[in-house]
Each structure stands twice: as C-alpha cells, then as structure tokens.
Length: 471
Ligand code: FAD
Image (tube, helix red, strand yellow):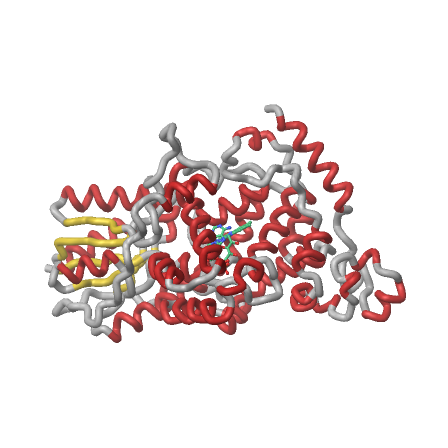
C-alpha cells in the first residue's frame, strides 16, 4: 500500500502540508503530477505559464530525487489517471493541495467524493492561501467586495499557521509505477519567443528562495515607494513563484514578520490583495468571464482588431504603454503600475473589452493567475470588486512622467526613443522637429504616431460610461 501525493500548483517540498501529512502515515509515497489542462476549464495554462511549468517540474523532480524519491508524470483526465495509479500502487490514500476557482473546485470535489466512496482516503489540504476564501464574511453574512474591511477581518482571525521545513527523506515504494517524461508533455512553446525568459527567471523552489532573499536584502526597506517605480527592481517578482506554489505565502509571511519597518507591512498588505482576489474568485465564480457589476454587461465595447494588435505588440505610440507591453512580451512579466496603465489604455482609450486584455495577459504572463488577473482587469475596467471608478481615467503621459520621470523604463523597452530628452520621452509627438531629428526619431516611420488622441478618447470613454451609469 502507498500514499499518493498529487502535485499541481504547489511545486515545492518545503512547507507542504499534504506531503507532510503523507509522511506521517509512514508508508511509501508516490508523488505524481498529472498534466490535465482541461481540468481548469476555459483557463488551461497559457503559453508563458507552460514554459514556466516545464522548468518548475524539472526542478521539483530533481528535488524529489535528492530525497530518494521520484516525480511520476502522467497526462490525461485527472480522475482516470489517478484511478489507474491507485490500482497500480495499491494506494489507500490520496493527498493534495486544494485548488480554487470554479473548475478546480469542481474537480477537487469529484476526486474527494469518488475516491472516498471507494475506500481511499482522499483529502485536500490548504497550502496556497494564508486564509481560506470562506474564512471571513461581512456582518450581513456576505462575501466582501471591498479590500480594506476584508483584510481587517482576516487580520482579526488567528494568525496563519507557521511554516514547516522540508522532509529530508521521502519513503519510497518497492516498485515505481511507470512515468511519462516531462519532455513528452510538450509544455514549453517551440517558439524562440520564450528564449529570453530563461535569462531572467529561475523557476522552482531554489529560484523562489533566491528571489525572496534578494528582496529582503535589497528592496523591502524601500518597498513603499520603490513598488511604484517600474525602472527599478523595487518589487519582489515573486508572483510566478507564488502562482506555481514554489514557495508558500506562510513562509513569506513569517519571514517578513522578522523584518522591521514599513516596507514589510506594505508588502504583507499586497499579499492581502492576493488573498482578496481568491476570496472574490471563489465567492463570485463567474467573474473571470463576467463583470462583477452587472451594468457593465451593457457597456458599448468596441471591436477593433487592428488597435488590439497594436496594443499587444507595443505599437500604440504611447511610450509607457508600449514599454509595458514589450516588457511583457520579452520577459513574461510586467510591473504592477504599468499593468494598470496598459489595462486602462485598452479599456478606456481604446474601449476594448477587458476580457480581451485578460486573455492576452493569460497567454503571455508567466505569473498568469485566474484570481489575480481577473481582479486586476476588472479593477482597472471599473467593473469589479473595490474597483477604481470608471471615470478615473489614467492619462498615459502623466502616468509616465510621474512614475518614470527620467524615462529609464521607456528607454529600456522602447530603444527607438533612447536618445530623446526626458522632457519628450513620454510625449514624442509634441517634441519639436529638430529634437526628434537629433534623437533619430521619425514618427510614423521608426516609432508610431499615437493611435488615439488621449483627450478625445477620454471624452468618448466618459460618454460610453454615461450610457450604462444609471442602469
Ligand atoms: P510585489 O509588489 O512584490 O507583491 C508581492 C506579491 O503580492 C505578488 O507576487 C502577488 O502575489 C501579490 N500581489 C501584489 N499586488 C497584487 C495585486 N494588485 N493583486 C493581487 N495580488 C497582488 N498578479 C498575478 O500574480 N497574476 C496575474 O495574472 C496578474 N494579472 C494582473 C492584471 C492586471 C491588469 C493588474 C493591474 C494586475 C495584475 N496582477 C497579477 C497583480 C500584480 O500586478 C502582480 O501580482 C505584481 O505585479 C507581481 O509582481 P511582484 O511579485 O514583484 O509584486
């Protein structure tokens, strides 16, 4: 007999409650990863996330091997594959880390009920969040829609459990069941598009721990201001590691508690936003596809494939927007401030449906996360929880001047504008002809003219909002 530990988005050994519980049974453990993209319904991992998953699985397999164990790889329907594995290993228990979001909750429920009925101890453990999405409710018994009271209520609960350390050895079965290879899953996109990712990221548990260390050493003290400066390495860049569960939020939480200063408190609050995003996703499961505020169902979104393409490729003529979209394409990640700017530009300057933006992010972000992405897009579009009011429309030039004052971020990602003085870096179309000529910028030739006039676009967006405001 054996215990199967099923890995999914919890690709770590450290602080892993399901693995720990399996070890306490003192029986052989069969770690398994089932590649089953359909399990996530409409939201199978996108291309950039699959690149990450491929590397992260290799890292987990190596970590397990160092502890005398293995990672068994299977692909297909989760239920069927685990069923076969139970037969093959005569396992009497199946443990895993709980997933969230409508499709994963349903899948977990199915595993739990079906295997329990057949006498297998099928248990999901909490390992992804500091507080379970249903742990808090408003006084009226409803889910929260506003962050601050939500987070206050969480902080009034018992503190999150303390993290545990990684097991040194993992008991193995006498005979290992067959395994597919990670290569055979064909996860990493064959495009050279992702080549640059490996220069910037180290997927896996060691990579996650290194990032945390770097953040504590170099950025946490100034996080409150540094987190809004896209040209600086002022945030932790832990998001893909957190998404794939390569580090637990508990470990981050308790590590940060040992730091003094406002930076660590500000950082814990951001982790709070992640908790809030999951609270909203679980309690409003339709939100990845539908606006939380129903009046937005009637919003007159425009269909404009050409403008959408220009936005995706960083060719809008607004330098801060283009810089962000190119950072995303090249690295699989974008700074939070710039995510807000590009999302506002798509939904308000171009009047393109936030769902189109969310899909593009889904395919190109290494940290694409159903809860956080949905929250970020609905927040910016004005249709979601605790959303920015629709009429608050980011001016891409002012945002650039405020958060990238020297233009370093733009220069990094839009090299065509590299030689422009900072006075014109965010609004090259207003620069005198001789300045442009000297900087080698030919608008409409080597860098686009703005695809919309922000002032006019703003008026059009407000007029569109008027149509649904009272509905
Ligand atoms: P840090 O500032 O170091 O924050 C630490 C951690 O806190 C992050 O790793 C993340 O897990 C969490 N966090 C921080 N800000 C937020 C936030 N606003 N909402 C939820 N969690 C947050 N985040 C994703 O992880 N996946 C997504 O798919 C995603 N899509 C987004 C789409 C839009 C339009 C917007 C505006 C935001 C989106 N975010 C998403 C939230 C945020 O931009 C990223 O979490 C953040 O930029 C990650 O960088 P970091 O790890 O350096 O953040």
